[in-house]
Length: 607
Image (cartoon, rainbow, N blue to C red):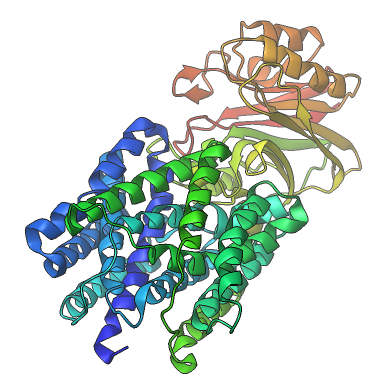
């Protein structure tokens, strides 16, 4: 590799890093757009072909990278995160990715291995950057640090694109087979390099998950740099593609002890599989521009479908695309000689140094601001809130706004619903870890729809007993759960709080079935409180059933019963019910735009 060839792998890494970030943004902002997102993003990504037809290969690459730099700066502004602009930015990233990787493969000696190694380095940098930032992308970090890093990335794109465009290469390789970039990037962003999802599914801390994934990212780069051992060429052609679906199955469907090792295995083998898949000769006889248009279309379509399939738990779609990638990878033998070890391990060393930054940056994080603990006199402050995956009414991902509302409320027991733990729809955010680190609380997690989404109870008080469990689906829309927590107050009394989130459809039957075990739990306990989003209005059969057991509504007794607790659409569906011996005071419905629900807070007195 000549010295002038060095800008190309660096440009590939920077474009890949921005693409991963914009893909997560797309799943957050475009998630509610449904078919619009699925159709618009691939349609725009197919412009990779016409761009090279109009401007030529070199000039088309420069223009695509320039548009990407502008789009990335635009979405850093909140006003730039509308659905059309985010779709345009994501499509720009996919177009630039296809063109840059195609040109990076134009060095006959380096082949697709150099591009795959650059993508692996981008994944390592992405992990190193997000882990100390609590998995928040720079897009959501509007302060000076976020802007400085974004400006640095955007500033790098221009000089790198100009240097790459002047590089003398053989005819750029790559056509329709570049569509494999879509599944690869979806697997990186949604499954294998998603620390929040790996942590919760594997039952490990976020730091531990980050160490596993960091080791996998470094191993993936190293695997591309090592020469193929003599006699093992045929074995690796079969083993690497076979290991990839097994790794994804281990992360998404396997038992907890296998999740983190499976993610490590997937991150280690995916770059090598990508290298082989990119070397599969394809062409449809209509010229390179037609093949590039198909590559852009396939990249966008497969990326969005696999991401949507993972979010909606539609695994047949995901595994169909995954197996297609594996079969394509098995169909060829890559004969390019690996680079000299001294040069090949430079990316490995860089990746290790980047990942070493994460624990250091975590140690520099400011200490937590604990919730109050004084409950003298047999009273405590309680909050219940549906946090809508930490997505505010304007579509922004705002975990810090949630923390501020909780902190300012003075609550000592906080019951939350729709809490994300590494879900793509919340940009991979693990809200449980985010709040634990900042509030110095005990967290009781009750997964609902899956391991990555559910109910949470936070408390600054000593926990005497905690139990979580599933509620009967009874024809409902998804699995529902509850968290049953007993805390000790300053004077020695114990208080019991049961938090839940019931079925959200129009039929009351699933909610009535889900209420039965909850009412049985609080029956006979004089200090029990039932709180959460019951998805039932004041005049509903469900609320009448609750009142018939003797439980009393805090908002009806000491608040304003006419106020709605949810705003889109306006309705009163969030409740705090107390046992007959419990008294309420100081009820407040906090006015905030941090969610599409409003938090309810009340002081609970144990009589």
